[in-house]
Length: 303
Image 1 (cartoon, rainbow, N blue to C red):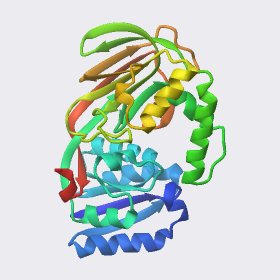
Image 2 (cartoon, one colour):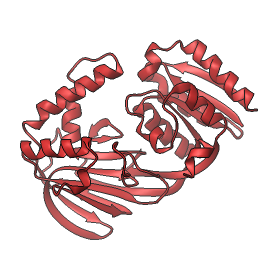
Image 3 (cartoon, helix red, strand yellow):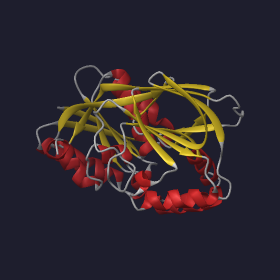
């Protein structure tokens, strides 16, 4: 197996890692397992260009991406469109896609598990023309991220602290908006505070991560009009893993979702895999079952 890695030197734990030494270690690990390996260190602003260049290389190869969730989401889009396998090296704050793929979060353990792994197929989803491997969200999450981005942080723990401060500030004024939803052809109109549409439904664990991402279904999570007290209750149930018993949240499975916002503000935002984007008036979300090839740990994947 030929592996070509692109490491975002500005992403997550890589900011404080000796990347020259790490790249050497990665090469040694993969060559010990009989693979060829090369890598390049890239600034965050050049990461997409570098990923596309590697994906376009001739011959069979694996595109490895190292960085936070934003880097991994961009890499999944590139790999999917180029039809090359993707290897995910988690170096971010949450590493949600890596968790779903059962990849160890410690970097050296991740290298070993991938070097002895297998290539499998998983699902990827799209919101209009934008792909995502975790979720598309509107309402409370974009509001919180907008607030968080006004705060300064320089590390993973700083980012988590900024997220907590942004949550506390956003909690005082939860968003409310009207949306027309069409779920697999069935239409309804609701006024809600948040909608998250996930590339496969959440699992039973504490974190909002699917148990598997090869089921071919979207998980649709709708939070009704929330008061500050109801939002605090929802946050508590999420932290304790009991959110499925919260009556303010509906969980629906679907293959295709259409959203229409009749009273959309120009400044309205959505998030795709945690990154803010302008919210279109109409959004069509679909899941593309088995269209993304990924390198995963061989032992953990089938459990």
